[in-house]
Length: 220
Image (cartoon, rainbow, N blue to C red; front, side, top):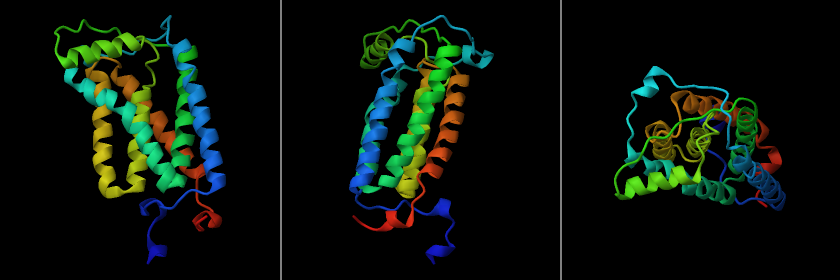
């Protein structure tokens, strides 16, 4: 019986969003966009922390992993669009989580800025060109916590809540995105772990703030 299934194990309620939900989602989306506008102005020095560990010094550059690294630029908005259309409660939870992740990250970027030096990328293959483009479009600051890792956690968690069967594959890809952040030398291990912890806490708060009420289960 559905009443015997723990809440955390239940799939998200799939339904069309109501008008009020669309308004809330629109406001949250605009808030996320507005916060992202602060990323560029904060992406500069001076660095106040050095989070490199001896392990980081031995991590090789794997330029092929730039593919999963940049894939989040498509995966995140497409996932949000799907959730908004099919599971508005999840979309609301994901957007609240994103807002919290960005706010916490920007506090660090203002008061505890870090820096990750980039290696010289050699070669003229497609992966080398892609990685040089990433380096050219993103300054080597705003590293802790990693937003790539944080948003990967948010996407993976919400996909698992949306559809556990498909979600485990998406979550596995999100884990690869997280790993790619250190192998393309955009982040240190501490940055990746910081993004994971902050996003994990943000997802918990996002879930609490988006619990369905009785009215939510009634189709518009």
